[in-house]
Amino acid sequence: MKKQKTNFFTSLTVFSFFVISGCADSALNSKFAILEQPQGEQEIIDTVAITVLTDIKPEKKVKRKYIRGIHLSAMVSGSENRRRIVANLFDNTELNTAVIDIKEYEGKVYIDGIKTVNANNAYEKAIPDIRKYISDLKEKGIYTIARIVVFRDNTISRKKPELAVKNPDGTIWTDRKGVAWLDPYNKDTWDYNLEIAEKAVDIGFDEIQFDYIRFPSDGNTKNCCYSKPHSSAEALKALVGFLREANSRLKTKGAKISIDVFGLTTTATNDMGIGQKIVEMTECVDYVSPMVYPSHYGKGNYGIEEPNKEPYKIVYFALKGALKRIPNKKLRPWLQDFSLLGYKYGEDEVKAQMQACYDNKVGSWLLWNPRCVYTKGALKEEGDDNIQSANIMENAETKH
Figure 1 (cartoon, rainbow, N blue to C red):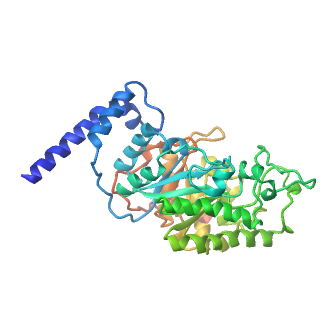
Figure 2: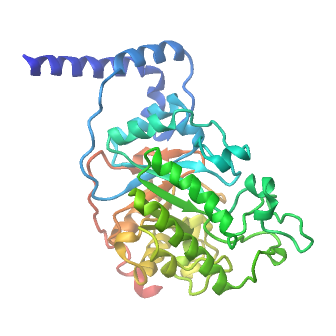
């Protein structure tokens, strides 16, 4: 009898959910998962949803064999309507990981209760109930990652100029987009970012992902003045030092640590002028995510004339190079699910990058789209996390 009641209530709940979700059907069933604001009848839907879904615990996913996730901006994560569309992706595809922006390069921080952040008016209430949202995701078996932009910071650099990269005349240096940077040599900048990371772990995030863990790359970088003499060796030492400090402060809390690095770090032998060397940096973290976006490679990289038009080859060669230098278990690349420079990316292009991962026996990946618009057709159904090698590059390797 108890089982019959449970089944009846479950059926009623599922039926009710589909009824109240009608206004979002076009988004949920479209080729792309567009996390946009549903229109009309929203007040009624929200009221019914709260009534129907109160105290219902969603089933947890099976244990993750691989990490397969998407980037979610603070705007998306802070909207109940967009969360529903995200939930549909997690419930019905192989996706099992959410990478949520906690601090972007503008410098605003989306977690409250951090002393230095609040003292400098850097907090922004973009995700008002973030603790509950993280709890809800974890209840569904979703792995949660807090993305923190570290040294590119247009807020605290201006609030506290003593922490900023300077021009020779002592004014704040900015990149070509007018964004100020924190000085990676200054340990007060380390402490500021790690305060944020510690709070993110405290509210429930499983992992901290550090982005812009590097020195400036564009603008008049020759004018950059730091708090100590700058060189490639010292730059790498500073970044590794920051990651070691992160380990000492975050590992005791049980958090994983990951970093985002330029795609070319997988094969470059120098630091490319930004302090990043993938081997040394990877030794300090659990995962490394090279941003192997084909659109970001120059003509002729890996012998390919138009990298943006060869998503499989670019990702394949980038990962093949990485695996000669770092452990497979730490490699989790960012893949491109956006269009740039006149070449449209869709299902085939996204799948090609995934296949390049699998052909290198790399089963984990993350999808990046700055607008959080994802190609549903490229994703397998929920629970299918196997990797299948197609050996597409069997002949191409000899030509490279």
